[in-house]
Length: 205
Image (tube, rainbow, N blue to C red; front, side, top):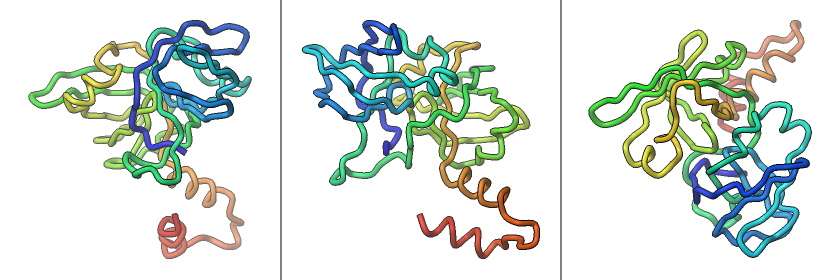
């Protein structure tokens, strides 16, 4: 599990034959889980200046190869005694969005991200979302896109200051929204779940 708080901006040295070689100051151990641009990967080799991770076929079928090039966001998996910040992030990319518009404001920058409409139900206004591994709050949700307002600190401390219109981003939607939608969509039509049951599910996490 992750929190969506970026611990380091690392550099990809090589990505070939499903192996991602990352130059990083983080001292990883063999078998560690590390999120790279929001993708949970496993360390298969430790190098003097970083580590190697394996990219599974399922991951490669969803995540565009350019998300494993240049500089990348790094977050090691949470430890049991870590302080919990951000929000609950699994490191599972649900969809790839595209930056459609960037608007500079007085104390922040608006990003409009377009996404396949089938994922909109899992994106909640004022809820949490993960963009390339960054825990962010959704401002508004539209039919085929959503709006984020990025404060200057986040913009400076992440790679978002390099994003342009057309940049692809890894998206992990809200965990609880996905769970509830899955439960509701698979319930028997003979037994309809009421809001009290939905609330009970949400409060149990």
